[in-house]
Image 1 (tube, rainbow over the protein chains, first blue to last red):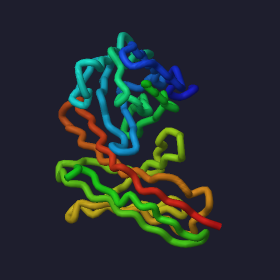
Image 2: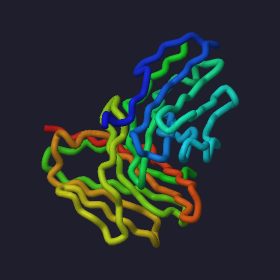
Image 3: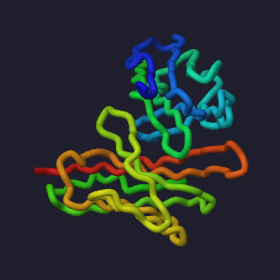
Length: 111
Length: 114
């Protein structure tokens, strides 16, 4: 298995534009997590799914953020409209059991 | 107060030194505990789980103190390649449900110098 795959690796966009981040979890994993990491706030859980169902989205900062998991092999995190304060590294992780496996992250810069 | 707290460091030590990190957690319902390692501009990776009886993996030893609500990581004979950020993670699983929430510390930065 190639591990958790995220795309794009880097994204630079202008304020107000829509941004879509993509994630393919490890096959067979039943949990999928979206995290955001910044120097100031560290790693923050935004939302997680169990068997494609959103369980806890209390970490989603605002209505501008939304996430979907239409099937077991794909998830998206969308920001619309994007703002400069959304600039961060966004990680997707999946797990089956206690260990979470992370993708390489998407480095988002909103200018 | 954050639910999981770590000393951010940085800890700068010479090669061969022994270094220890502590992490405190505030929620006594926490079920399981982990140390992750994150290299610069990379994703976090599991270093080791932390068991009640303590556990060792080569040069790394993890301890859990439930009464005082802290976990520790000890690195012996440190190597240059140990330079990274070490993240303390606490899992608030709800055993009867499908709720799984990993709470992350901000990390402790370690630099090992030649």
